[in-house]
Image 1: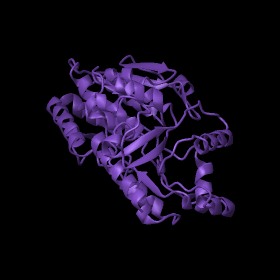
Image 2 (image 1 turned 60 degrees about the vertical axis):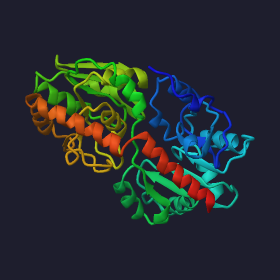
Image 3 (image 1 turned 45 degrees about the horizontal axis):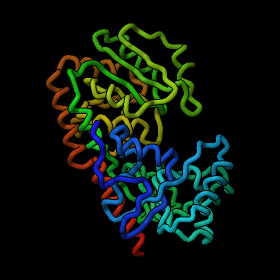
Image 4 (image 1 turned 135 degrees about the horizontal axis):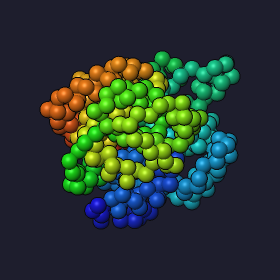
Length: 370
């Protein structure tokens, strides 16, 4: 893959910019930035950090250490590292509130003076019990601005009445097209279906559907365990047909896996029911690669897969709907091609890293002026 532009040399290089943000991510930002510059990692998984300098925002990466399993220990360590970082910055920009809860409460109490801007991956909901609810309301007072993946998440969050509407913003999170363009140059003849991803995947429904459509070949890559969901135990209770090839891995290798996905004719996203955008990362990759999808109908997705003509959505736990969708794509190759073209067009028009970053930068700069 081609190396990145010289404009992005040096993770900690100083720029003459309008503002500086301390960038908190739940993964090793400096390693990811290095791999991104080498063309080995898609930039959108850093939520604009790769491109913010182009829009007047310098990024100071958080010094990453592996997660503590204990949430309290993680929060204490993160709070200490940020408060003692020794760098001047104008705002804290985070991809999640996991690990910075302490700073958020300090901000709510007026003891931390920097604005906090973050991505909120799930809808804001009412807490169980009056004490938890009181603490939750205090917590959201400490967040100055929140980015959401879809309007549905914003609408659900407003029902909890814990924050002001003007603090919530929908951002069209999209793929790093430069990264995927380098993959597309090496694409050969596409064939078969592929399923990747690690969060809340519904393996029994997907496998049963393919067992009923022998002509459909499925290659699956799945983690051994994600959170409290042990996929090895799930698979132990499922009879896997010959047309399904399963690879259970310790961790999903982003760059290498993207090359494999690039050779598939269709992407299958089969997930459990949830109240947030489970499967969105895979959907974003499909747009960039111009690959149609069959996906569980998640109403929190930022757009309707069927209306945009980029794939087929099916209800949760519906094996028969999956079977019908598989037959439809197998029997209509012209529709597969059209869906793929629509997917790439949607990415180029709206859902792409450049557009994502521009909107984020505008929000950060506006906050800095207030």
